[in-house]
Image (cartoon, rainbow, N blue to C red; front, side, top):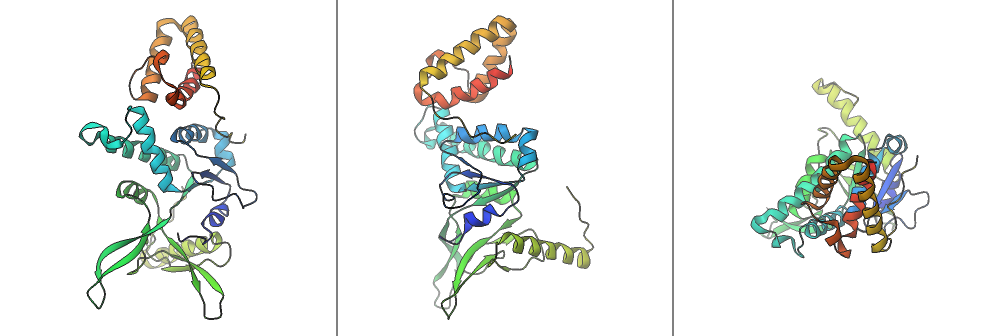
Length: 304
């Protein structure tokens, strides 16, 4: 989306929406339920909560603002998990594979849980293969995403739309959502008959729903297609002193060992391996791994 076109406002119109605030674009909007996403472990915490039926009763839509920052935090998470500062430091391209797997699994699970997702991205210009009358390559506006996360998001969504503002000769402005590619706009849709450009001059959401409904109705009519129906979420906890985190982890470890013996130890080692990517001694984790220990603690509590 182009800057200042109301992308966050549009997201707020989705029914019972929860904003995952990877950037602070909703501060000026009233009534927004949002969770600050400062680290990828925040995202992991929210995913656990979205599995709760109580969350599913409260929310229908998840708004990711913005997906580019989400990808960067996911990459940082994999780096921390593997003790490197750059993803390419993981041998044989393994880091890029791990990031793609982690990123895809999170969003795929959210869709499988039944939530609708709106991914918001900034725009950037890309050089296309098309050329103008002077033989110069045409540049088109596209989502500001590396190829890896773009391909993942593209496989999940029904519409890749570009929201822009058009200035009229009388000085007024109008907003439009492009759902089909043009020589200068990158867009697309799974809906065969959706309008290539949708007016967004009201709330946007109603206009989009109506456009999708019209496209489905036409496909049913022309192609004979069948239509098939398919406690408040807490915020991530504030950062607490590292020693407090480690004290709770040790206390839980001792309590589980006392109650469940070797079987409990085995379960805890499985949890640690799942969170860290390999088995580690909790006594040797460093302060910059506190987020991982918090995830371990959450799973330890389920063993009690």
